[in-house]
Image (cartoon, rainbow, N blue to C red; front, side):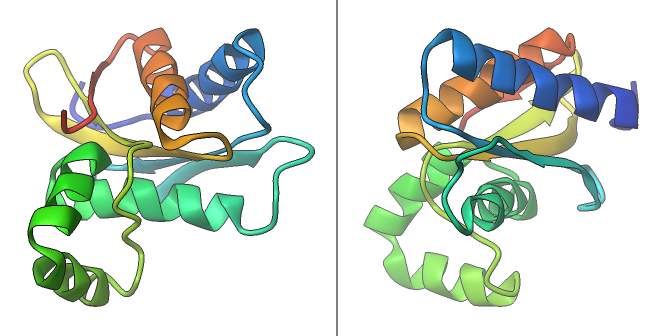
Length: 144
């Protein structure tokens, strides 16, 4: 697979939300970008708080823009805050450096896109994102 299809993106969203319901997570927003940075799928469950979709988008887009899962971005924000501030500016503010932004990779390790999830704790957001990616038969990279 050389690109992330709409079908795969929709599978990721549905499976991430299903995993969240099975674990009784708070209502989530899930954003999926393809490798070019185009938004492929976006969904927010009933009851999500205002701006959760934008936070999910920032987690995914930031991970994709820097080529690392947002768990690594979180560490960068702690270790090199000026770099992350500059990178956030460079990507137009769409960088949320906390877990929940997960790279989507193929079996050869090529980046196909990224998923961002927001609504519960960052760790739970990441769990839902990883479950969605696995359900689509792809590999996830959290940046851990």
